[in-house]
Image (tube, rainbow, N blue to C red; front, side, top):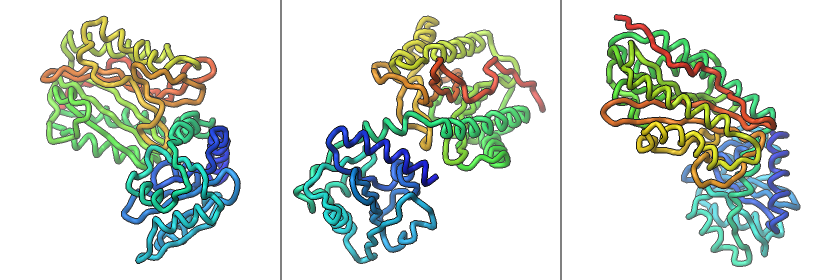
Length: 369
């Protein structure tokens, strides 16, 4: 992984150098993990990785992190600040000691504003600039290796969903099905996981959480789930029915399924993200349900479950082969039903590939008492 992180960091530095940026300063979160191989999340103890275009990169960490958590990032130089020390001064000193004052240093969108301001105040000769476009650009276009890891995570989600939907029974609660999904993904080799389960009219709550609602015949069963393999996420949603759905619910499902397919077919290198959203949304609007499709069509997927690119109307960013994102149209009618059909897909040289493979046909599961 350290070689992978170094290679991606070199790509980032090349982009930054073209802008006249001298270094990138990464704070705890997804970016520092991706570009260094040192995984550390936000806490009250500031940490950073300084990667110059020319010169030796360095970590600035609290003494508790002095051994870099036993990880093996591609560089190991470090400045360690004591518990009673000043972390912002330590970061500023690391920048100055590498001849980067004066300089231009890039920050990503997830840089903590307060931390960045305190470091900036100690470095009047340094100009901090937004490097989010470059940081995001490298992460957006996945390598074949990264897509392989996402494909593994998708296979786990596919299999776990099939196993657990077969266990539907009258009286099962949303929480119970959620627990079954979590256990099955873990059994199949999933690492981190999430599983949102909603029954009946509660399926119209796009961000609803599993609760005590019990399954009854005729309910929609909306499952939004995913897991990681090698740190990379899958994202899969299917809406099944427990017992025979009404004719209207069948029609709504078919509309969402067609919207998913229309968006999938719109994906090609060079196509704007907004165009893909519009292709799927048009199907739902033409069917008269436009007011009930209340979110973007998709979001990027990688080491974060939501990352760039965002498949939303008006986004003129052009798709490239290697970009991975969700295709998830939905119709949500409060007090009645919610239906979403979501796949993890990859833009390829020839179009699009579904990385989740769970069947899309409307699934009706038999009532079991």
